[in-house]
View 1 (cartoon, rainbow, N blue to C red):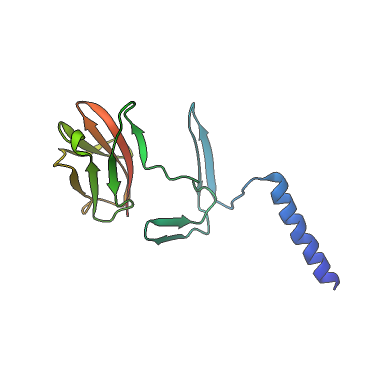
View 2: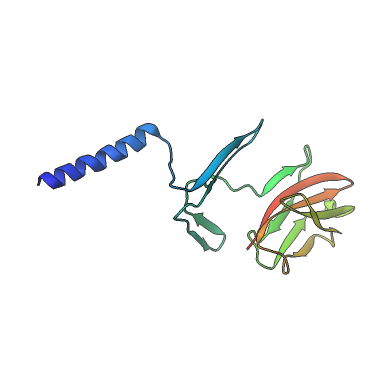
Amino acid sequence: MKRLNLFTLIVFAVFFNLAVNGQQQVAASSGGTFNGNSISVSFTVGEPVINTLLQGNVMVTQGFHQPHLTVTALDEAKGVALNIKAWPNPTTHFVQLEISNELTRGSSFQLFSMSGSLIKENKLEGTITEISFQNMKSATYLLRVIQNNQTLRTFKIIKK
């Protein structure tokens, strides 16, 4: 009985401490945080338990440094009603880029690596353009839709 009470007290103390501090902690070999004017990036190296589960278009990842929001459209033209979609995301073979009919004239796309290197560039083929990711490495890419030298929208595309 004393052991059960002691165990209950310890568990309560641990959860109370976590609730009061409100901070997440991780057992990792290294990591850090970088702060800029409008961005903060935190990372860990060597986190011992990480698992990603994917079903349909829902992805759940265990770990402490996970975003609460997945942003796929990074920027878009101001004052223009846009109907631009990119799917499936994440992808394994290709991405369909769909743009409303009135925006197709003079529009193109650019695909960049996260380091900023231009990988592909082409004019849009119509309202739906298929962009192949077949021979590309698993990574995150930026897909920019442009019309008359103005960026309409930028998507973050994840290649598995």
